[in-house]
Image (tube, rainbow, N blue to C red; front, side, top):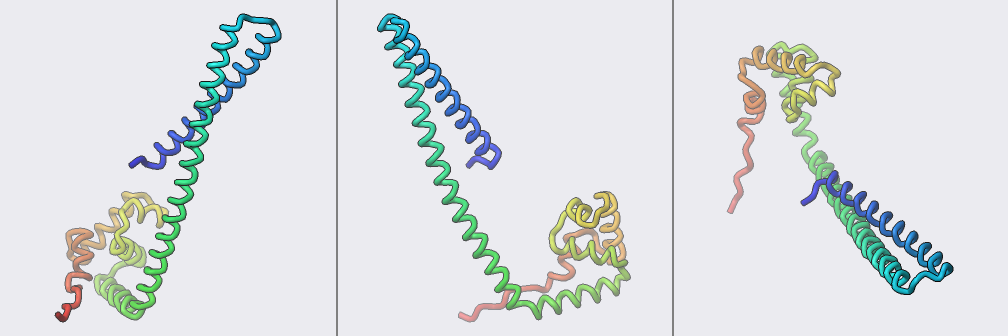
Length: 183
């Protein structure tokens, strides 16, 4: 499957070809009219007529292809929009169902951060790391360098006696298990 940049390039290329064939067709038509007025040989006019027909058919084929792709793109955008709406609705429902649990988990995480004597900045970074953000993303959000974000993350791990982000996540989620289904 093509990525968005390749799709844009192909679309622009087709537009360029369409413009080129339209331009060739217009020039051929102008030349045919001028040749007829000058009384040029019939064979020359027929050859230019063939050029005009080929350019016109090519422009028509490319136009139809662009119209089909535009229709397909609109349909794809509709499908993606619907899927995004469903995902957002599902996320909202999940958050509503688990709000009290998430609040309790957030409070427990904060209490543990306090036990580790994390600074407010370290607490914020710790939450970002638990949410799965990279050091680069944390740095961007906090307006610091990536090196600073990494150093602060190392400080968290050291204060907590952990070896890295996986241990940090495991510390809070290790006991998390799916409920046993009753069959």
